[in-house]
Length: 328
Image (cartoon, rainbow, N blue to C red):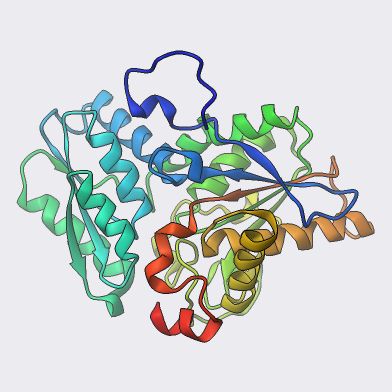
């Protein structure tokens, strides 16, 4: 977001301070506000994590200048780390399941990173394994591992959470956010719960993901098209703290796509499928607050729109539902 009134030394100084915009489909008496993370220079919320990870690992001596940061990633985290690497003296290498967004992989390479693909059917588990294998082969190389690094949570506790709190003057009734690594939701929640313990927290995942099992639901893994959130293996999502979450809601691919298309055509919001899913759940939470079914400290809901639909145009994100699912 262009809020600066002076010249800046680096693009990294533009990370964060993204706008908080009302979702126009909010109920009359319970506004929903979405943090628009596509306003970051790398066009996603993962820019926050990328800069924080690189900076902290260098400051703590976990990697020396000239070294290599290797990360298993579906794309946006890679872009964020690669963006940071252009301004710090490190190299970036990413291990990406091959079917993930071509746009993301192209941007990582454009930022000077090396991209290594693993088979789609092996999922993120194999990408994580291969990243660690590569790190063992190289000198002065680390795998920050966004799925288990507390720096992931710290990045959002230090930036995203305080921004939301300040922008709403502390009037935060409910938090709704997608869960992939869970760093975003956990960081925001940790900060805001310290200020307002009664805030209601809803985690969002696709139908076919497994976070709901942590809240007593019996769900099984199935394939889904929504990208950037969800998990097929809870063991790889070490950052998720069920005790900090009041509910986990699942959203179908069909509902997420319908909502992201509505956001574009009715509200001018060009967002990805994870934002579509978050918007569906945010509206449900707001409806329950308005009807009196959900008690919250303030009648407001805040959510996060992590990135832009431009990242997924090659996958037909705005095509009819069947074509989008088939292309992904």
